[in-house]
Length: 98
Image (cartoon, rainbow, N blue to C red):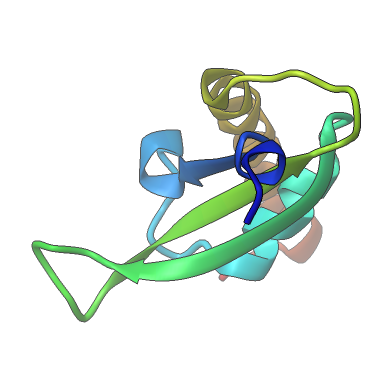
């Protein structure tokens, strides 16, 4: 991987985003694709050290060309966005979204 590409990938830990345990990698990817600076994203499950049978989601974010951003910018944006997504899913289905 070149330095140019490496500098555009931000590992953003879902644990830092206060995302509940029931978040799936695909949900996190879909959420980040809504951000205007995101070109690509890959999310994976990472075992928790304190409880290896559970995982948290870690996202790797690639920026669009000529765009600058920081991991903190994505964390702050995602906190509010995730709550809105979950609230929307709950109200549309009448039950908790899993």
